[in-house]
Length: 470
Image (cartoon, rainbow, N blue to C red; front, side):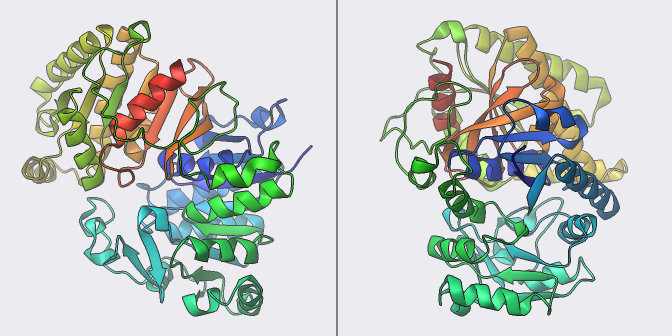
């Protein structure tokens, strides 16, 4: 029985984000929610090279998050995994310390390398200080995150507040001396700390780190390092197509339309300058339109929603204020289902999105607070309402191609659709893949992190899903 890489992720979009880093290098990669994990999946004939378990724990209490990660780590170890990654948000939102601790405790380990930088998505770390598109983390859009506002930028400080284990840093100057020097520093620091955070300036930093840390049994942080690590693993023959794995992983250009569901993944670029007017019927109208849902309040998703509307996609708002009025809620949801279903049956693409106007969002929070609900509660309420509408529309209109934005919303939609697992297919933009649902209906899905993706991403993803269906 071949060994596997085991990954624990704290939300479904993060699970896909890191999974595609291995899939595009030719390693078969499957994702399962912890709640629906079946150990038999690790014994199947098409046993994956990389197994990702999503704990959906970012909004949980630290205690619950710890228990979930401990359980997921045990399942991965019992499935035959011998190397582990704890995938977290690329800006340290969530229960970082408890989840890192849970993995180390479960494996009886005392040390892990932590790399948060993701240069392709604007995340860099210098001197332990984290930047988002050149801004200090505390000055970025994540300062206003409704559940996990990030009010400081020093990663060592952030992690120290969430764990009793010692935390240390390797600065960029050491990393840029090369893999041998970095490997020696990692070995020296192994007895000095439990979590060793590494600076990241650019993609070259990640390549050096990947080579220096390729024998480390536990890595923690964002998905970016895995892109470089996967190339090394595939080159050693773990992937079925090891000869071309490096080329696939570094492919920033265009690729063929998606073929069979188990085809190795490759990066797929945008169609040069082509504006896809998704409000018009698909050329393959029998396949119907693409059903899109956006629950994230991140500015990137708001910009993507606005771009999609300008591109002609029929859009309908899930009014967050109406959700707080029980007498109006059911009729509002029923109307959304009717409107969206009619568009899809006519072969057009449709977008359902939560209220993202800042004034309405603020008013929703204010009223929810008077009703005894906090930001986490209203976030879950919106995700559950949106997912219920999506599931009803998918059933009524026969939609099998879906795009969902937001980690909480993506998890809720997958649960509502009965998706038991996901096989990662192809990357559309960095960290944003398409995937095939495992078990039940073979939905083609794109599950997008709220803060990732270019402004035209929805339009690009819709075109990608339609090409995949063909």
